[in-house]
Image (cartoon, rainbow, N blue to C red; front, top):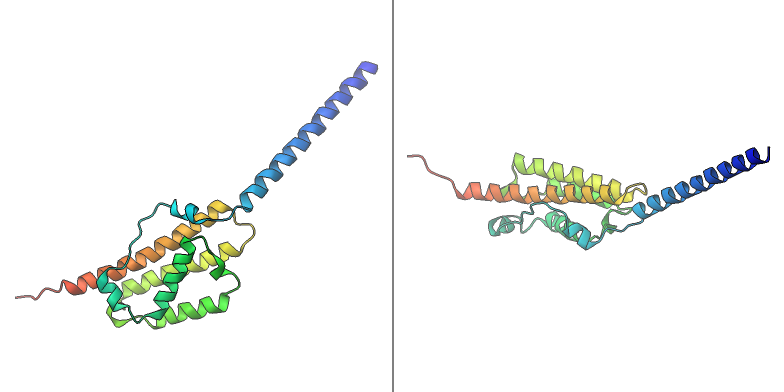
Length: 172
């Protein structure tokens, strides 16, 4: 009887200790994953092709103030600063509305408008992911990459439009 009691007691102690260890490990994993801040070095490690505006496209959109504001937001995101997306819903909506409304004539094509729409979608996605407390670091980095790729594709499309306008051939 004494042997059975000791063996049951020792099994009980082993089970209780193992449960405590697994709970501590789970808590440690969850907190380390969600508390990490995104830094400029994290964003610089993202692999994507970045297209900048060429000289002709820059001249064509020189008066497009909304593009300049969006470019500043993209620059801040590249630095790891997501403060633009915090409780700024009305300003973001107004900026994007004006961004669509004031497209310069030289780059106002359906292809550019499609890239703007794709960029808007990624901007709203980044805004929602940056505001969630349940978003982990990897999800946020993936969303930032999508946002940067969408902006890069917008620049590429404007460059293509300017290049196509330059290469107009007359038919004989």
